[in-house]
Amino acid sequence: MTADQPDEMASLAARLESKDADDRTAAAEKLAQAGEAAAPAAIPLVRACGDADERVREWAVAALEELGPPPDDVIATLATLATGSVPLAAYWAVTLLGRAGQAAAGTAGVLADCLASGDAAVAQRAAWALGKLGPAAAVAREQLRAAAQSADPRLARLAVEALAASGGA
Image 1: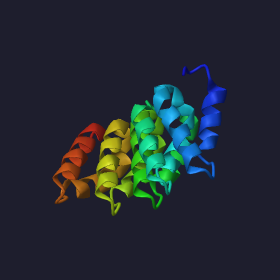
Image 2 (image 1 turned 30 degrees about the vertical axis):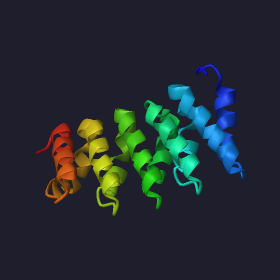
Image 3 (image 1 turned 180 degrees about the vertical axis):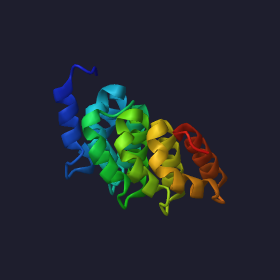
Image 4 (image 1 turned 60 degrees about the horizontal axis):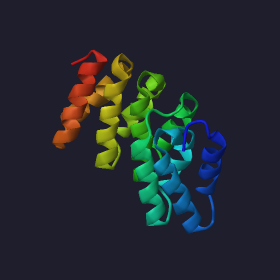
């Protein structure tokens, strides 16, 4: 599949909403095989991380692993998903926000809120993503300083790195 097949990507993304788990699984698998060309399906793939079927979740994650930065027009939706109640979907929403870098600068407050997530992987990923925002992460310095004191060594390290990237210590 190539990036010049947006209709096919849209069709596969729509199939992630199918009532049939086998159809959802097949769609997620094809999106995983599409690599970065599956970027237009970023939001349906993040939502598929909360699918009831493990195979769908696994293929959605495989597809998300291959995605580069998300399209700019989905950043606001990713910010909403980042604070959702499904930890795997929140993790991938935060990951894509980090991959967006400066394009996601307006989500620094949301990412700061994710530092207090009850899910360690989401909190760690939020610290990483804030580091990718650079100076835009300055609004999260208070939360990053708190995270830098965390008993979780990975979270603390990522928070220190994000503080440095934001221009604060």
